[in-house]
Length: 100
Image (cartoon, rainbow, N blue to C red):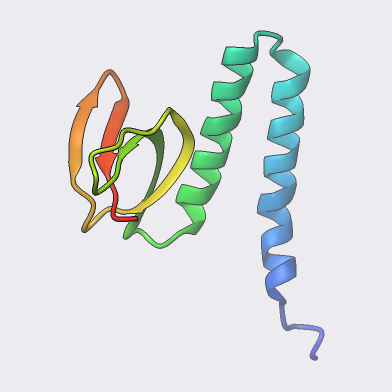
């Protein structure tokens, strides 16, 4: 391999290091479990949103399956933004129906 070629590992080391630093900082600064958990979720959501194709959406929320079962709160949901209907969005809380 030429010294000018980059590997996927090299390309993703920077974003990985940034995420690890952010998560460590969050754990060190925030003491309230709910705030710490939400900040951690937002870090993952931001990182995944940045690196996934635009067609895919990343968020947290609850999911309704094809049998109308409602999930508990899910920290990170990755879904196809083109084909996944948004059923409800209130106060940044998302209710999405996914085909499982």
